[in-house]
Image (cartoon, rainbow, N blue to C red; front, side, top):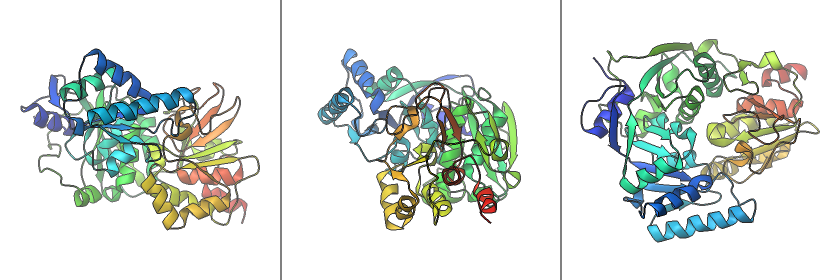
Length: 416
């Protein structure tokens, strides 16, 4: 019987052939800790009277509330810096950006690696076929202390994307369609193995990150994109890091990219996905472009393309938060930033921003937000009755101009 990508990676790390359902103890290549969990992470290490076994394999990223929103957060972040200094652990401080984007930029997630993070969207590292997975503070602390972790080898769902995206349709639309078809619990504690075929292999690294990022919204333990295209050109991909032809899958799903239209996830569940036309005209108070899902330079450029020569509608707040300092610098160099500012956008510090409702754009009762993030749960960005509609940067930008949910194409027709 052949092996899936998840089984291949865990077999390499375990030093023996393993199959779905087995429990394994494996070496961890990188441990990622975010600021909002770092305090609990430090307390657990202190309780164990332990230090990171391999400090160079641990990264702390101050991104969830960056810069500090109040005194307590400021004190907690000061503790992070002091503790990391004592233990030789790297810190990516305020303004460097969102943890997942930063680790990818820094080369701290590589094909075939195991990366555990104290953030559920650590599945993002699967864009380069790293086994990225989110864990709680205790498991992450134990991984840092021992250099190892235990995992149940997951079953695998195979998702095949075929064809090329039509003009105006993005990887975010493809990812939302995948979540819709799988359902919120359709891949619980499974690996989602993504195959890009017949033109789909041309998807960029950033687009692959969007796909891997959203697999956790179907319950996935990991989201693994089979290496092809840009990943093969940019990374050293081990020859074994491909699924076998005879691999066994729990289920298989096929999506024709060429048949997709712009999608939107409607409150209050990520898998509640519809065509944008189904909710066209929904009034909008705030538009948020950014996060680990869609805060990359290509996302900001897509939004700027829609916004050039236009203005944000009266009464609408457009928040744009680059996923990293590198993205911000590039947007400043190529004119993207100026186009966003001229349209009326407010630019925020690279980081998570209002994604989890802590600061920099919290929603008031009854407000409606179109967001390029990954979750629209009740209360996610503030008030329990505030509504979050998840969409691509193009749809988000068009909605900011119109003042209601729409697509750039419909915006053009309305002003023709």
